[in-house]
Image (cartoon, rainbow, N blue to C red; front, side, top):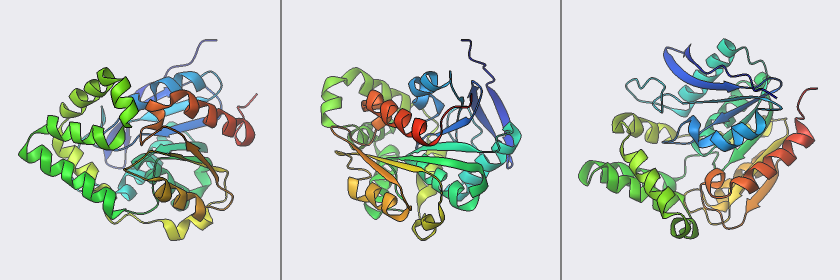
Length: 272
């Protein structure tokens, strides 16, 4: 079956976002994490575009989207996407948010519940964690004192498991070179976007099916942090991925797709 392709730029909330838009049917919206872009989801979007309308874009300051001056906030990112949904004629969707994208998804779910039919939160938190924030600020300091390559290597150490780094040094090196080649100032703005973020008190209002996933070896958003997200959302399902650190969609792509597929079949089946 041929998959409909409609990739484009969308003017939204005073900026311009790049959006990959594939397939037809009920919408799945994939929100990437800090310092990534829509390509993070390449494998999983291909897998689901035959049954769903799959949307994966680049958040403000990332990828092919516009990179205006900061400051950025999670609330700003969420409003960018809310405005984009109107432009894309997305009335309701299942939001799949990874890391910072999970923060954006939570914000959309509490601020604009009418557009959220289901929620998948991966390696994320519901409030700014001092430990994680310190790690991210250290990346900024290293980028400015030792250069972007050193900062990217530091990032790799905090997001990939030791086993993955040993098994896939080529992939890790590719990530380092890619991250170091980014425009660093928008990355700084995006890094600081989560400072002061806290929606924990609002999550009890979420009334849609929710899946929360964590990597058992994640040191950036440890299992206790991610588990806290699930504890605040009524009826949330919690899944731990053995052997995974922060980058579940990369390190454990098959396990991630299986967990997502199982959840969708149960709560958000494709339209006939």
